[in-house]
Amino acid sequence: MKILIILGHPDSKSFNHAIARTVRDGLLELGCEVIFHDLYEENFPPLLPAEEIPATGKVAAIVEKYCKELVEADGIVVVHPNWWGQPPAVLKGWIDRVIRPGTAYRFEEGDDGEGAPTGLLKASAAVVFNTGNTPPARETEIFGDPLDAIWRRCIFGLCGVNDFHRKLFSVIVTSSEEQRARWLEEARELCRTAFLKH
Image (cartoon, rainbow, N blue to C red; front, top):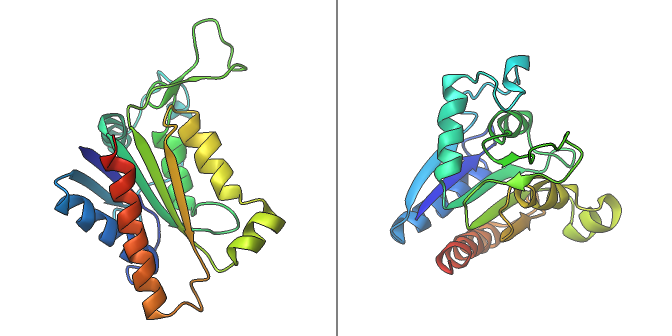
């Protein structure tokens, strides 16, 4: 099974990095093939040029590489912090440039873009891990958990990946080493169950 892991956090000592490494190592131990991308370390260029917007548009070589890996992935893991209810800009740019028409979804012939697209991704499941400093109850009750809507409905659901799992680890700033160790084990186990049941 080929799993694509996308990490979006600028600090290599962050808990996001610890999650991504733990998940990667756990999947490798299970015999999965893992493709791992740290978008900040790779200096992924997030700005979407006008020529890349159409499905038939010319895309940069780096984007073409990411698109190929996305299409070939049997499972997808995304790790990022909750910044203003959104992914960091570099990850949003990756979404804009890589989860593109003709790669991740398409509109049916004759559809002018107003209908529901057809998802093209073959991934059996997707897992998103987020970190935050807002208590989960407040995140849901006050803000409506915007990251769940973005990833579940606006991205993976639209692209045909309906087996979706998401875990928010919070509150990071006050968490203990023991709590973080338990969270890392939760992350490892969630990926094991999400991908190995298929």
